[in-house]
Image 1 (cartoon, rainbow, N blue to C red):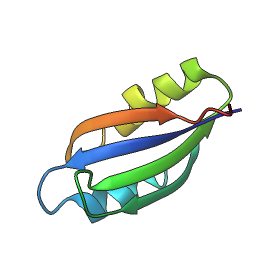
Image 2 (cartoon, rainbow, N blue to C red):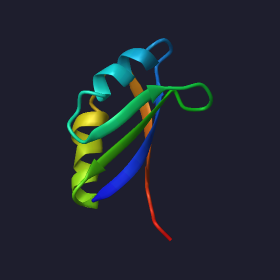
Image 3 (tube, rainbow, N blue to C red):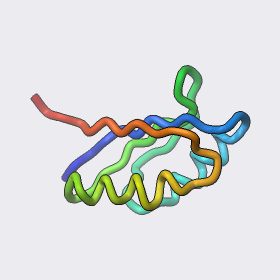
Image 4 (cartoon, rainbow, N blue to C red):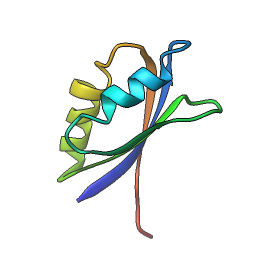
Length: 77
């Protein structure tokens, strides 16, 4: 199982809508709107890194109002 944080920047005033929409995507554990340089932080999981990448590109990045994403896979050192 691969988990990652997805940091998202949105258009002004769209953070709540983006977080709500993303929270319904299969594989998303949590999506919250936050303050700071990013507007939404998402915790997601998938079976493989490739599957995670497909979810981000095909589902998360297609949500209206998103301007940029940064995916940070969780590692266990």
